[in-house]
Each structure stands twice: as C-alpha cells, then as structure tokens.
Length: 162
Image 1 (tube, one colour):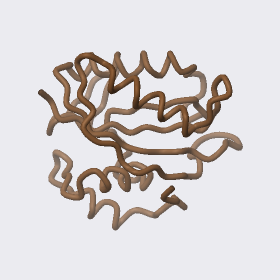
Image 2: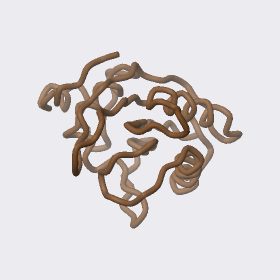
Image 3: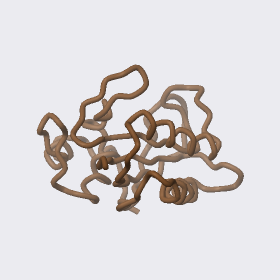
Image 4: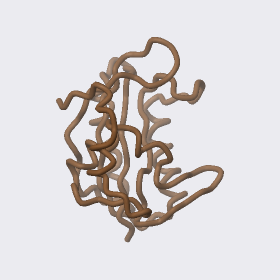
C-alpha cells in the first residue's frame, strides 16, 4: 500500500454547492473508492487565487491516503471525481469547481507527461504546505527537504485557516 498526500481546492460553485461543499463531496467520494483508504484530512484554508483574471478565493485542504492504486491509476480516479463534480479543464490555473492534486506518493519522484510528483510547485505554495503540516509536521520531500522548512521560507500568501 502506498502512502499518498493529495491537495484539494475549489473556488467555484457547482449546482449550488459552495467550494466548501465541493471539498466535502470530494472527500466522501475518495473515502468510498474501494482501492483508497482515507486516513486523515487537514484543516481548511482560504487563499487568494493564483492565476489569470479576477477569481474568487479558494478553499484548500490536504488529505492523507493509503492506496493499492498505481500513481497513474490514482490520478485517473481523482480526475474522475473532478469530472463528476463539474471540473472543466480550459484555462491553466483558472477557476475550478474542484482540483485534486497528487502531492506525494510514497517517497517516489515521478516525472511523466501526465504526472509529476512531488507536485512541482508545492514548495512555493503555503496553501499546500500548511495543510500538509496539519497532517504530519515531519513530512519530507524525496529530496530530504522538510515541509516545515519550506513553509518557513514561503510567503504566507494571505492564507487564513478556517
């Protein structure tokens, strides 16, 4: 079984569901997947959007999973959940109903056309590092860098713990 950390984010409503409800629905879908065990979910954080245009604030969190799925099979499962919740991929870093990112998969480094792990920009994003710290302050990237050190050297980017 692989130990996996994923990031969750939403800044758009879908069918009247708020970003908070989007995260609730995603967590429920993940927990019901037969090949995924949901171990823990972090606190939630409100953050300013990084991306084009004038976007609503994001609600972000992280989750710790255990899974028998390969990295690409897990990616497929997470993208299916995104699709079920109205995710449409149009503009890079655009507003979205749901974003599920594989941040860490065991201690592996994966560099493929479809998937990069550790997530390539997580070291510069407090809205990823702070929820990871909530789950386990001793997490280290495969490079040996600790999330605590990365977070200490990262702008807080105006995140607010909810």
